Length: 271
Image (cartoon, rainbow, N blue to C red; front, side, top):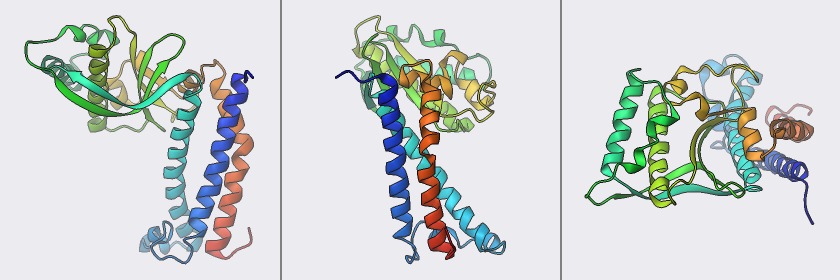
């Protein structure tokens, strides 16, 4: 039986939200009387506590929710991508010293604003070999996707909200460029490989320009997959973002219901 792409995407989203809501609720309800539980260990800030029980509770819960929800979204995106891509989360192989030196020089130029990032900057990096033995390296990757239809290889660094400080921006681009070299050295010549920096939502508002300078200092505009561009890509649909968001909203009540139960248990109030 052939399953419609939208139906499959919606099934992944609804299942992910349901599992998350259940797990989040079970976890925190089981820790109510545990002084070392996730929320109980976050309530000892005396400056927050002085603002009242409600603020103390919501402050602790918000931190736990933000972190765990981000992890759920990342895993959900991987499952959606698996519908159309071969998915891996590591790259391993050989890289040459000349290539790592080239990468270091390129990143230094970006750092000093002597050069604006472009995909053409590393187009000829595959030719930088030497008589010396290559170095074997393994990189953990957020998403290494291979399009089953086109054969294009995608190396994607996903930051849920896109927050990336200066040190991370450089190190993330360095890791992606090394992964690019490893793939280019091992795949058939001419195999398309793309480096992408992605976010699950646009922190500036959907449809608005992406302005984070630390990202733009090291990544070219056409290396960005911001919000809808990311979801459309992993869904292989021009309406991927709308489908994911619509199905998430339909199931979001499961999370709010879980939060109400947790609040009742911790604050001893009616849900």
